[in-house]
Length: 105
Image (tube, rainbow, N blue to C red; front, side):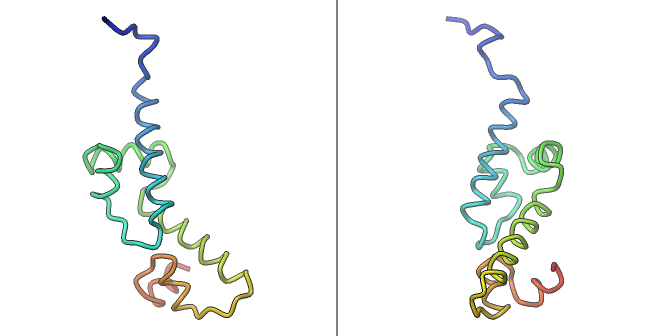
């Protein structure tokens, strides 16, 4: 049976689904290393194509997106009033060290 063009998702819709899979993966693994190749694999796209599509749809590169989410999470932890060291916050948010966190902040 042949599927009509109206019932098939458009290319843009398929790209949105794939980028959303990567975004879900980012949100679930923010404290872990997130490499472009891993995100592209989750989205079932080549790294080059994924980077291009992600940037077009999200308005930033995957790396910029991850950094922004990590900084937002860190700011949230800082504002909670808990007495966590900056190093601990940096590591909980996926930064390699407190100096990486400081440079990004």
